[in-house]
Image (tube, rainbow, N blue to C red):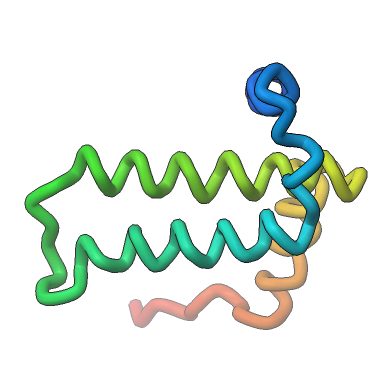
Length: 97
């Protein structure tokens, strides 16, 4: 995770985008990219454009990871913390025998 985060920040910094990549702008960009991802499924539960789905997911991940960096958060740690909370909130289902 740290290697890809380093590549994202280096890519951004080489283009001098860090000045506009504020937490607010990154949050907005995540929502915009999520909407673009959703467009692939607007009229169906299936998509004919898996390439676009991959690109939109990548955009969401890039913006999200950049935001964790800028906020001084460890992405792996916050994901693990959320999984623990979700495990409490949504316990495993008991399957019938």
